[in-house]
Length: 156
Length: 269
Image (cartoon, rainbow over all chains, first blue to last red; front, side):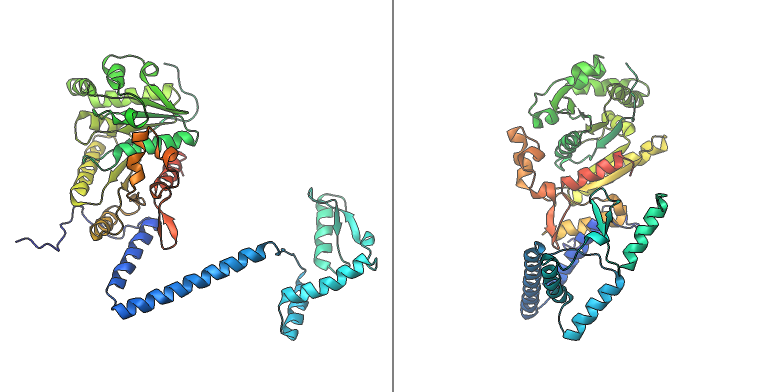
């Protein structure tokens, strides 16, 4: 009587042949599922619960990230200013985002009241996307970049 | 025949001596997929059943016989099935071609050379050859013509035996100086829940490594599409057999993935 559990091989196996990445994933996933089949009903239930919780957590995080997407802005800050903002946030036990938002309310109000004037700090931009470049006198990094660009173009 | 300008024609042969593994489906799907990506494609039906034209809503015709046996120009016997997609249709009269190849000395080489030359003269980027599930002179000729061979296979004992037979034939042809640039295995009608399937996939990977491409999952819509005269891209472009099935949170396999891999071969990536 032949052994019903024994599968005769059809192809000679070679050693150390790297599998396609996706195929390797499929195989490891199926191994994982086979391992899970060996668990007791109690262990399997615990695993399912943990997995469901993890998936709910991920869904929640992704939903939150999507909601925040419209309010998010990407800023390039000079190193020293970023460090100061991080310091202030740490000192006050709050997030950098909240510190920046608070300070911006003050600064925007000043600008709208005419207390801040950009005209002295504006110069023509090298970028095709913008008309002007606005650099704060304390922003040494941007000033350095600007003078490098000037030199490169032979205008300096 | 005028000389082809630009890139040479690449020949992809779809082979497995076992029937019912998805050779014709793979041929039509890849042919129409490549055509959809802007490649000028000729699908050659060397199976006497003539299912390639039927799957593309075209009648069976003695195209292969008229071209090779009656020596009519290729451009007169090919049929345009879609934009960028032509078919050299076959039917049971293809057996005359088989007989001619058998009777002529170096018949297989002559057939292969003529196909390459005529397809290149008509500026085809790709020729995809569909074969019957058997081993005869026509099969050997198509493997000699091939730059690449794709072997669709179900992951079952008898189908895997068919794979081994194709590999042996490729080896023999290689010994006679007809080395293909590459061959790949495409698991089809993949049943992820069956232990046998997974065990056979492991076996295939152990033997062939990265030549085993991600599988095409079993999907009822693949079988429905030809009855409506549509390709799977037209009938169910978002089905699992096209986009792949979800495994560990991401989609794997599917004809869209296979198409990208074939495109990479054509681009020499």
